[in-house]
Image (cartoon, rainbow, N blue to C red):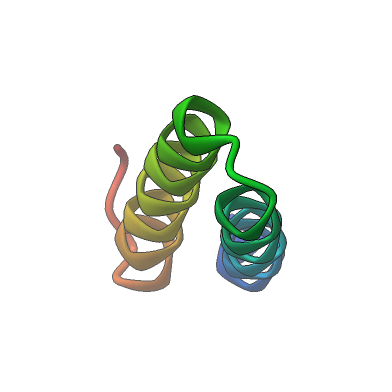
Length: 54
């Protein structure tokens, strides 16, 4: 199986950057949503890295 964990982690980091930008602009509901998305993608990356299916 192809290891896509790096792709998922890169996207998680991009989502986290976007969450930080939204927070700075005072768009707290979007910051929360984007931070949640980042967390989900980071967990997916970890599962894939460990050879697990999420």
